[in-house]
Length: 303
Image (cartoon, rainbow, N blue to C red):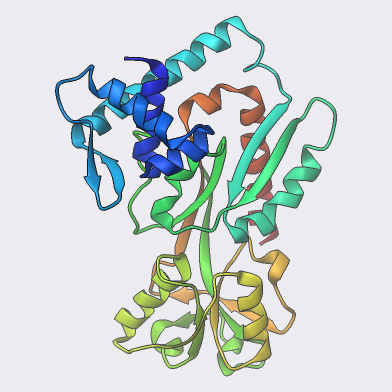
């Protein structure tokens, strides 16, 4: 049983296919399959099973993959004890973020860390459904992720969670809308509006499902748009209401729209950093985490 075989098993559990593991580790699919076969010979219970065209972990495979993650983390500790890599403030850090978070913090983070001896951050936008964020930690040092309060928690046994922001989604209305004069609105107030919202599986759609349930009405959803800048532009044009985050929507806010809290429904989303435990043993990664925490705190003060 080799460490690199455990790493491959772990990646298979996170990514769900041999092809995805091969792309992440920059090897061929046949090399991945070969190492999995060699690992299987060392244990007497099946580690994988076929699910359609994909190869997925059995329960025993997941147990071994989790144990392998602990081994990888321990190896990171060993490297930290004998080398300067983990203690260096500089170095490359990969960060993925969903669109609205990227719009709000990527440029700020780049400015804060612009200088000698600072980490070199490489940004990528990954706008995925909530349950897909943990798997991104296989590809990036840090993952900006979001989930609604009532949604399943992140798998803390596989990823480390660093809370950044607890942010409400507010109702976005054209400035001239009759409801814009109110300090807050309810589900009954807005249930009759035409809506622009996200695709299913994303936070705004979850909130609108709650609006429909509380008001006992079928909502008129006209547009399905994930990009908040487009949502803001459509609301400003008139004819639809939308949902926008209170603190991170600053870059897309339009002077012709207003945000109003939605009372009686939980609309808060949690923005967290997800990372594999071994990545947080690097000082460069810790520096980026601390900078993001400061930036998010500043957004709350501005809001």
